[in-house]
Length: 108
Figure 1 (cartoon, rainbow, N blue to C red):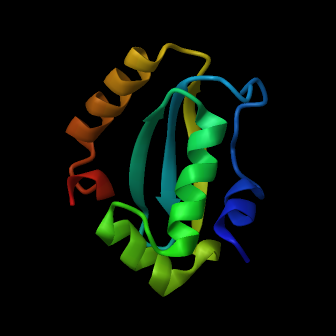
Figure 2: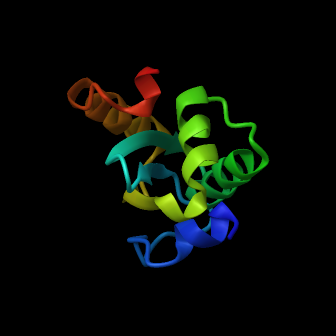
């Protein structure tokens, strides 16, 4: 099953997220309880972009891609952390979360 369909099934996505909303979301490795944090000017577009990159084996984060290749899309989900905020605030939220989550994929 392609990642973009798996990530949207049963995912906690804010019902108020509009296609052009800026905000922050996480890609969750459900088996390893590990996260990849993303700040985006367009949440919907960024989710689609990251899903396609992972599905095609071209994601910039090698550790995330390696786990995706090993587990497949069924092992991952997405959760929107914050939506309908400006991009700079989304970046700040992600930076603060990364200070706490030192095991995040973003650090690899």
